[in-house]
Image (cartoon, rainbow, N blue to C red):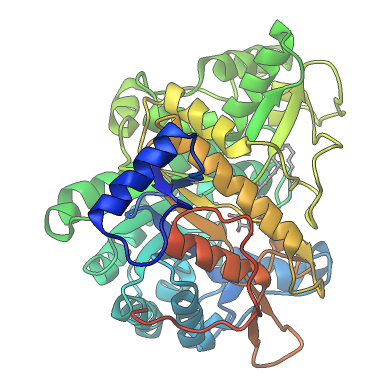
Length: 523
Ligand SMILES: CCCCCCCCCCCCC/C=C/[C@@H](O)[C@@H](N)CO[C@@H]1O[C@H](CO)[C@@H](O)[C@H](O)[C@H]1O
């Protein structure tokens, strides 16, 4: 629950003794409150920021790092990136990690979520060849954070598969589950003494749906309504293998937690009609239920309505069997409950209709299987990313739904942020408006009894926004990509977030006097 605190009591002046305090509180109670109650975040609520390896590190081929699928994509198919850029250098955090940690200290962060580049520590993806320079980079970063009491939250896979594994079929190959478990073991062995929060995968839907069907993420394949489902099942099985590995071999001595981060934007029915309510449910199942149900639901296994829909469509299309079969009973039991927390990346709300806003989808495909229309309400303020608009109380809607559906799991919001255009002002009042609305929705969520334990803004600094390149900026710190030093400068939103972290309540009147960021005592 949030904590109420008395923000202004206007009958106390000068030194306060107990008698005057009691009289004052009685006066307030008797004559109507002039006290403004502030909802506060709990003192142990984990405030942080998030990034990912490919989007910030650069050093794409330095110190023994292997090629990954984003390196291959940007070097062989450069025009798919809207501004024709690459992550070859990015924010150059590989060489600037100490400045990044300094920024975390300026913000007063409790935690920092970053990802490990699989190919930086295992250049071929296989665990028979470990790159010591890659391990050293992450040890240096973690040690610098721990030195300043910043809790590391580590994502093992944030979309940057080693190319050698993609050449073997990647997530479509059932052996991926073994390759991934072997990689996870190397991570737990090398970093688990200091890292106590592990995330196996970032956003399975963006990996499987956007990578193997929607062609919006590497490896940019359209595997006609089959690859997305193979990817989904192999990813969930790989997650469970890593979880059980950690739970049996590492948790007893390291005492950490292992979870998964799923993109949970809120999908809301366009009307209260039964058709639209089912359409929204099918969209939720296809975008995140297919990954969350097997792990977090009481019964386990894949979502029933989606299984039935794909079976029906497969039969109509002449397939001898369904394109999406459920896990077998042994797999269901192995996967169910295999997570210590539910990481949620949340940005926006999408309206869903059974009849309106429909597009022509390729057949077969998951979008055709689900066969619904979706849109972003015109009245919702738009950002610099077409899919990201500000929707009212969207965190509350998404997380209370997860609370009811999955019996109130421990949740960390592992990403939430707003996109502005490059060269837009450092006085980013639109981002501040978005964030304050998100934080208010989080307080509503806590008041609804959701087991929300932390929040990571996306992102600490501007970074490569995948196919959108460096056009949209989502950082609390602006990065000068014209400067070889990749200078970082705080935006106004960085000071507003710092104020929230320090005071634990949303002060709508707070206006920083300037944009100078300093490190407060003790950070
Ligand atoms: C744009 C894909 C449209 C797919 C059409 C069908 C699906 C219905 C609409 C789905 C919701 C819109 C897609 C939203 C995707 C975002 O949640 C995802 N891109 C967020 O990615 C994470 O956030 C950061 C900012 O985009 C990103 O930099 C980070 O790496 C990701 O973890």
